[in-house]
Structures are given as structure tokens and as C-alpha cells.
Length: 315
Image (cartoon, rainbow, N blue to C red; front, side, top):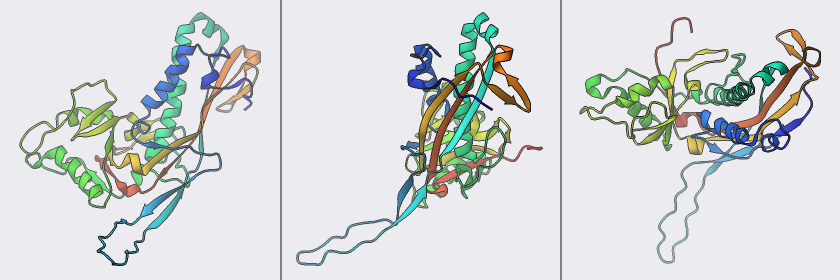
């Protein structure tokens, strides 16, 4: 596959005439808004050779010292974890005639498809450790669904708090292990249940005004980020039994881009499309390659709880 002309970055898409300026900002906005992980995780710069992140182990506290007394010596450990840079890429191609005949529709598809391709790849990697295109497991990385903390939704009886009690049990598993708990990510199919959840006295616990279109909500006083990638069934990845994950995202998940979304445009290359070689120049076609290099590190997968349902037959 050869797609090697007109390399560009988002910031120069408008100056090179590939996209008009308003759409450049729209792509950047959609990449961050559509990614369920990027809404809640901490961020950090990532180098192409990888970073190491130092995490303190042990709880360091100071002692009270009286006059003339020796100052106490305290100790703590440091655990190092390494970013593994990963590339996400996708190619779209179309006929020149189709673009000329319907330019607005072409640009809409461009924004939706290419920005969505990257965000789905990032989310599936960090949440499930999967390559969204092939359903293969990415080697050498940790992912959120690996946590040993799991609560099956429907465990608590309705008169004992129901769904709310289930989520609180997951909260306790994280907090009792010494971690903070600052957010949830959830499959949109869980949204109506969270909105309708009540406590043991029958009082609603959803904390914000109901908006079924919003990608963010507030449950039990904590932000909820909704995204289809939480439950799988994206690309080649089949339905997963995870419906939500909660825990300490801001401190325990660090996500960064070695290279932000990068575009290469050509009308002269040849593309291997599933075993069929497509000659763009000969067939009057155009193509754009979008790619991004990103990495993440999870300092402790057990700083999270996954909330699950019974596996779907055939998944």
C-alpha cells in the first residue's frame, strides 16, 4: 500500500486546501468529545520511544515531633510503568466525480468517518485491549476491563437499593482498597436505568437534569461519560458483557498522543483493499489516510470496578 503524498496535520489542513477552516476545528472537537476515555482520563505527553510513569507505593505520612526529639524517617516505594506507543490508522477513498457532485455530503462523511475511526480505536484499546478492526488482543498493554473488581448488575434486590446498591458495592471495592473514585464510563444502553435509579427509600439518585442526548451525566454525584465502546460491539469486536466501569480515572489512566491526527492525501497511489489492488490514478479516485500515534498507561487496573451483565448468547 502506497499513500505517501501531501502529508499534513490538522493545523494545516485549511492552509493546504484539503479542508475548510471550520471543519478542521470540528474534527478536533469531535475526536475529544466522541472518545469516552478522553473525557475522563488524565493526559500526558508521549514520545515515540515511550515514556515511563512513576507511581508512589505506600502511604507516606509525617509524624508529630516534640521539642528536642529526633525527626522520624519515613519510607515509600516507586513503581514504574511504561507507555507503549500504538498507531491507529484508516484509509477512505472515493471517486472524484462523487466528491464534485456532492461536496457537502462528502465533507460530512469525511468528518464523521475519519474522526470516529480514531476515537473508536483509542477507546477499544484502553477499555478492552482490543484492535477494533480485527478483534485481536493488543499485546503488552493493560486495559480497564482487566480489573479483578466486578459487580454483576441485578445482584441487589430492589428493596435493598437495586441498581444503586450494585454501583455502591463497586465503589466500596475501589475505595476500600485505598483508591479514589472520580467517574464512571457507561454504555448508552444503561442510561435510562441510571436515570431511573433510586435509593433504598425510593428517592431518585441521578444528579443532573435528564438529557438523553448528552454524552455526560451525573450519577451519585459523580460524572458519567457515555460511549458505545464501553459495551463493545464496535467494528469486529463483538458484544462484551461490560456495561459500565467506575474508578479513579484522573490519577490512574494517563493517555497521550505522540502525534495528533495526521492526514495524507493522494490520487496517484495504489491501495490494497482486502486483496483487491485499487489504482487511484487509473480509476480517477482520491484517498485520504488518517493516522494517530497514541499511548496510555494504567497505574493500577484494580483502581476500577467493572459492572457486568450476563453474556449474550453467541457473543
